[in-house]
Structures are given as structure tokens and as C-alpha cells.
Length: 180
Image 1 (cartoon, helix red, strand yellow):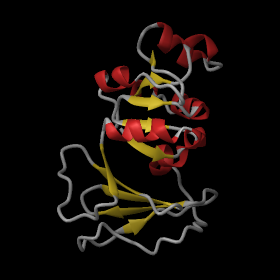
Image 2: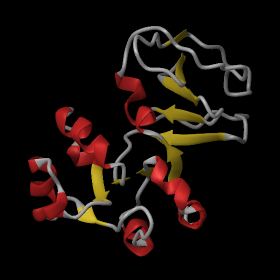
Image 3: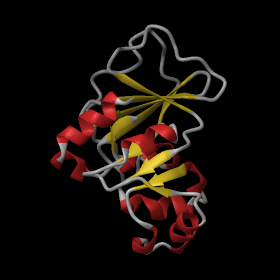
């Protein structure tokens, strides 16, 4: 499971504008690839997105974490820095624990990417999320402090979107990272 990714990461490729204030001292993959362009941010801060030949995108967060988005049918570039987390498109089977992000997935008609939820069906205020859970399309996989690791692994979860609440349970974060 890719971990420590904020809500901004989930939608970074869909945002637009300018006004980026993040210090991105470490540019690129570390293998010599050159940036073709960068996303201009209008309102968002604390991240940057650089675009590369072949449809690759590198998201750099304010905490210096970096995420390489690899397009479907493309290979992971050789020689990339070890600190880069690779996310292969399409990103499916998401464990969504940051409940505030569900409305964005709903508005983008992307609930099909969510497989697991940290909120039970009856607790959702978003009707489409509740309906998907009641139909079994989205499964309850436990809240941030007590996830169902077996269910997460069985569903081949490729991305966990957590809120900062996860910082209160570092042992959960470590376990999610350790199970991949």
C-alpha cells in the first residue's frame, strides 16, 4: 500500500492554476530525465507536479516525499531515486480513510476506484458512497486506527488515502507499509 499520501496527491493531476510555493530543490527522477512542463497552481500549495515525456508525472509534496505516476502500459524508468514512491495507472482498489475526499471522488464519477472504506455504509453522508457500500462495491475495511489488514491485502489495495489522523497511530502506518 502506498502510504502517507494526502488528499492533494489524489487529485493533483486534476488540478490547475499557478502560485506554487513549495520548495522543490530535488527535481527529477535522479536518472537524467528532463521535465517537459510543470503544473501551474492557482490556489493549491504544498505540492508540485512535473510532467515528463511518455506521460509520466512526478508529484513532490512539501514534506519532500515524491510520487511517480507511471502510465498504463509503460515501464518504471530505470535509475530513479530510491525515495520515489511509484504509482501505476490506473490506480484502483483504493482504501479511502480520509472521508472528506469521498465527495471529490463522487463528483468526479470515480467511486469505481474506491474498493475499501474507513467509514461504514450507515455513517456515510454521501448517498452514492452509501449505495455503493450497500451493494458491496465498496467494503468497510476498518477505521484508520484499526484497519482490516487481511481484507486490504485480499483486495490488492494499491493506494491508501489517509487523513493526518494516521499520525496518531504510527504502528498502523508501519504495518500498512510493511504489508506492501
